[in-house]
Length: 184
Image: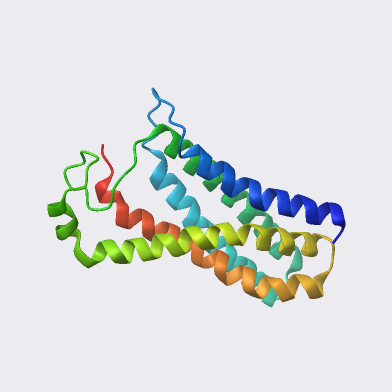
């Protein structure tokens, strides 16, 4: 890996989480993108399927198919990110347990949500933290693969793949857990 590639990976790995977190302080009024959460949850589901297909392809010796599926997985992850950001900069925050959809979580609603709320936050926290950490891992794995540094690619890929798969699957789980509380 070249020093330029390393620098680009570092910059990208820092810039994406910083920009995404800053965008949570930006709200654009006048746009209704409430249709996006099931779409980007579906994109996460498709990413999981694509990642599984990519591993099956490489274990079957189908390197070209593996490469195409991994590139498609990266594309899907970028598409997810765009949808996620677009939704969150145009929509009010949704609170887990907000059954009356008023944007305020009362003590009664918290009690009604019970331990499911804690489970939701544990899954969400692991999903978010790992999604930040996966950025450099995916980029390093990708660069090593396209640079034909297959030893290094395989070495980091064995960690990148299951974490990325976990993120894709938990993205779907988080959506289904929070979906009943979206204001419509």
